[in-house]
Amino acid sequence: SGDVDLVERFCEAGKATARSRDTNGHTAFWDALAFQRTSVATYLFKRFPPGSPAGVWLDEIHASRGDGLLHLLCYFDNFDAPVAELAELVMKTVPEGMLRHANQKGQNFLYVAACNANFWILSTCLSRGGPDLSRELFGALAHSGRSACQALAESSRVQAAVD
Image 1 (spheres, rainbow, N blue to C red):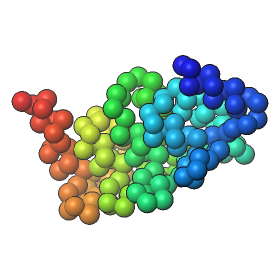
Image 2 (cartoon, rainbow, N blue to C red):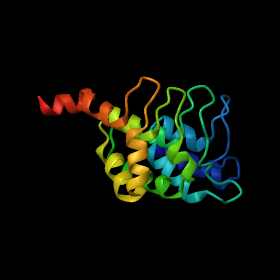
Image 3 (tube, helix red, strand yellow):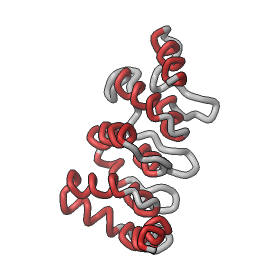
């Protein structure tokens, strides 16, 4: 909570917004996700909602890796209730093009979720995305030639749970 208190003070003083950039060109919201600071990311999302002048930039893409915000959410080590709440906020407001966006390895966010056995992301996409989008995303081949379904079946986390 110390992180969020500090960020809140900067934002309230007008010294930072969700779109403030670091030396690598990433926004504050991106950094909060990349460094898995859930409370900071949630604060920034609610304080600077997408569409507002200083709001969260939902189609931000990493310059070299090509990951989007949804990719970052799939990398969280501990996908608990606060992360699920944040993911829900992002998933229901992200532009449709970002749902289909693939990174430099040809991986859409569902592929990354499958590799990490992130069943919350997988099931949320199935229930909200509709059958056509779900089929498209689950079946899309990454540059490795594997689909999200194949990645899930081969995931070490799934294998460990089965064993």
